[in-house]
Image (cartoon, rainbow, N blue to C red; front, side, top):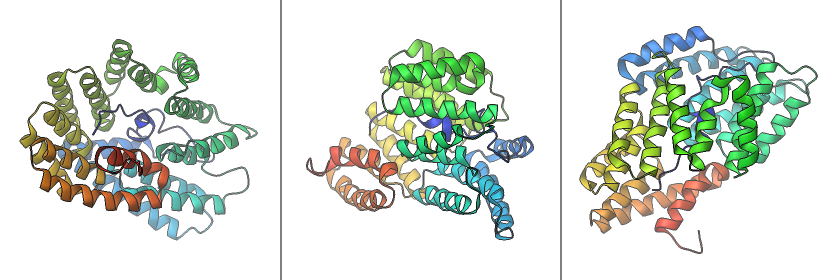
Length: 347
């Protein structure tokens, strides 16, 4: 699998960031108190505790929603929590749950209201860029939009431009936002520089963002360190990449996404046995087809083609299902699967 900087990650994988706590109209994101309590729990067991605390919050919100047929605000909070979970798990089922909650919200909310920022962020996360813009446009048409909401919407627009390769527009927006509120767009600006080859600028901004992040937000710290690791790998600095990725794992122990990249670096270094062991452990925890593809590639590199073939076939079935269910979200990795293992005509 290719090493890609997570261009959309700042808005979805580090949701307890400045962007994540922006106020949506009529209500707020999860309270700072809840964030602190969740982070204290994370300190003990890392990723597992983070997901457990999040699941408890989701369960509580679902119970409240069940008692409030006409309450879209509570459903918005539930949607925020579900999107946070989806960004951590990358499970298609979690993204589908967000979509279901959004559908409920907009069926209840009066015209012109509803969780527009959440809807925009969700559609960005699943790569429905045009649909994300529709919700941002609806936000802009509100009679009295909140300053925080406008700023958060601008960040999402910049991320959309970056995803489309509209670099000049993305840079202009991110520079403007960062000048007014450095904490709101510094990570996205770093991602811009990383994607366009400005590694020194990106590293400086990532380090600055890391210094501004406390130990109470291990998810964001782990995500930033992971980006530093991916950038090192982009530059061919495999040992430095491993160092950064291990540091990311120390911030949020057990995060499968970090471990996936650790395995990829080992595979790139020719340490195929270590890569295989990590991938196998991760695949036992979650049936993600991208992990099947990565493990298959490691087996191929280790000269175990028959074992790889079984995994490739298994992954292909899952990709076909996911592309049918949520095409934009699955198409990128699904295309990688076909390019690496499949038929050129299918690709």
